[in-house]
Every structure is written in structure tokens, then in C-alpha cells.
Amino acid sequence: MLLALPLAAAALGAWAYGTYEPNSPLFGRAIGRGSRSGRVAYLTFDDGPNVGATERILETLAAHQVPAAFFMVGEHVRRFPAVARRVADLGHVVGNHTLRHRKLHFCGPGRIREELERAHEIVAGVTGRAPRAFRAPHGYRNPFVTVTTRRLGYTVFGWTFGVWDSDARVSADEIRRRVRRKLRPGAIVLLHDGDGYDPDGDRRRTAAALPGIIADARSAGFVFRSLAELVS
Ligand SMILES: [Zn+2]
Image (cartoon, rainbow, N blue to C red; front, side, top):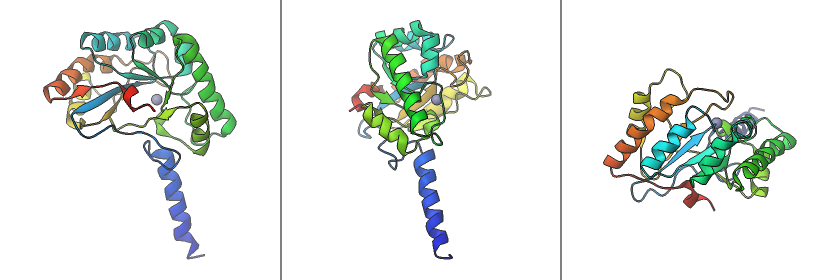
């Protein structure tokens, strides 16, 4: 019994690591960072599309010729199909972020299949392109997630750092400052153009921070590249 305790604790620790650590390889590989050679970084936006923020973010990206990836919530795509289509038409990566932004770690295989396959169908139907990248809401995964992402042929992404831009108390200037402080070669930057649970959530602060984020990164010698180059 006494001997079994540390084993149980270790197993629980491993399970928690695989579940809550967005880049953990325990439940299948998740890409959390690109190559560290050269000053390359990747911008990713989660939980859209969103009427107040996504269009503005697209304008900034176009003005500075920066590619990005958007991990979209299926229900939001269904609600704002024109915004989702525009993201895809501009050549950005559109990834699957589940149907309803459900935390998947306690879900069984049926629910997980539904969340991923329904979102897959909606994104493919609306944008005309089948998504090839997946990011789990909050990064939470379990072995059933891996089964489904493999079947759908997805590359699974985590992230290098987030800046809590979804917290309403964080200003656009603070979002910008946090990205500047944390940016590293190969970083996959997690930002939010939407709210996973509220399709009308306000992400205008992230949109307002973006021109400064791009300017800071460029003056530090960084080049933003498309996440597509990490999709296999
Ligand atoms: Zn999310």
C-alpha cells in the first residue's frame, strides 16, 4: 500500500501533465513551438470568428503582409460565415477549435468525435477548404482526442505563450507589452479574436494591440511566417 502510493501519484501526475499541458506529447504530439534557429514567429488567433475583432485583425495583417492562423469555433463559423470565409480567402490558416469550445479532457469518444467532426464539416463547408490543424480548447486533451485528430489527419497545435488577452482587465497596451517581453525564436503566439463561449465577446483590445505587436516584433528582427509550414 505504502509502495503503491508513489506509483499512483506518479500516474496521476502523468495524466494531469498529458491533459493540462497544451504541448504534452503524452496524448499524441502537439506542436508548441517552431524552429529556434532564426527570428521567426507565428501568430495564432483562437475562438473566432468575431464581428468586432476578426475583420479589424485581418485589415492589420493585410496592411503589414503578415500571415496568421485562426482556430475557429464551429458554432461561431456557422453564425458568422462571411467572416470565416474572408479569413480563408485571404490565405490564412483556418484550424478546428471544436464545435462549441468544449473542454475535452473529461469527454468520451462519442462527444469528442461530434465536437471535432461537426466543426470540421462546418469549416470545410463555409470556407471550401478542409481544415488540417487542430487546437484543443484550453489545450485540454485525452487519448480519445488523439484517435479523432489522427483520423481527421490533423496536425495538433499547442502554443509557446499566451498573454491573457482574453482578460477584460488587460489593456491593449499591456497585451502589446506582454508579447514583446515574451517573444522568442520559433514562438507560436496565442491571441484571441473571439470568445469561446460568447459569439459576441469583445476582443477589440487584442485587435487594437496588433499593429504595435507587429511593429515591436519587426524592430526586434522577427519575421512572422504561416503556421502552414508546421502542418504535416
Ligand atoms: Zn479557445
